Image (cartoon, rainbow, N blue to C red; front, side, top):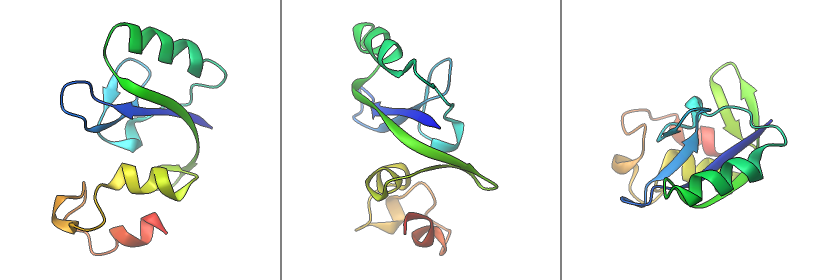
Length: 98
């Protein structure tokens, strides 16, 4: 599975391609297959995203999980402030990253 990530041009937030737009939640991301470069060119040209790139991911029972730890950290949020993550009340969230 190939998914797209980048940063929101206005807020800098990490965002994920859903197939029709961008979401803060990695579980909303969709497989772009071999179309990643074309989607990135269109979305960066429209100034909807900054520094977008394709990453490998896997679909699990819990949702989409980026294959590399860097993207899992980006998907969850800051590791130094668990209260600012996308799952602040989930004590098991750290296990998702590793």
